[in-house]
Length: 285
Image 1: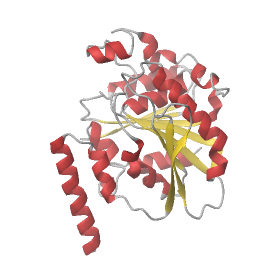
Image 2: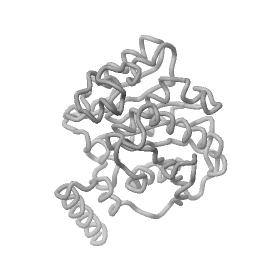
Image 3: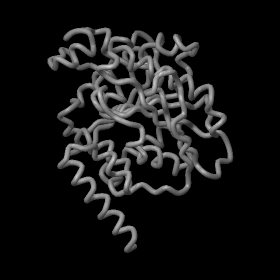
Image 4: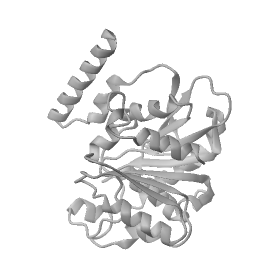
């Protein structure tokens, strides 16, 4: 117990320092994450660009092919590193699930649709290599937080991204979008207007790419999210249901944009039921 308390104190102190210095609180949480029970196979290339890299979290003692969530982090499509998301990998590897966290190219190096194209490349790699790491290529889930949720949901909403890699939409067993922007026009920020080719480019919105049945989606958000309004999840779910797709929205009371992803980390998991909800969704398919 003293050791656990010391770890928790150190992690919370680092989190506070990170918030004050505008560093990523997600990275600070890495101090709390156990390193036992899984192996991280880091820096595997899924494409030619230096940012086409991913890490695979492989649980120890796998006895059969496991489901594989592929996760894309947030950062306004302009920041982020896969190494900051150790807590996400451990959260699911500790439950016997092979977990992948991927980098992707960022603005201003690239603009839309490069984010979704990179997501498709990463998915193609996971589909081709899942068995080598104990995963089941028939049970791949795409997931993400914030901008990463956009990437995951856009990938599942517009089949041409996967088809361009030689794949099909049924490569995706399900989608988990965490506090994602799916329908956020008009754009007002100059960077976003440049990134998405105009203030009112409907082609850049996942909701406008749903014109038929799509993989089942779990869309989660916090009621106090002021960065990406919960209505994005509501409107996306309505569009999916209108075209015969399964969609569930879960809203966590009093939770904001960063708090929702932090609730997957040790020491914060009691803040929401996100981990349990994700596990239930994955294990039901």
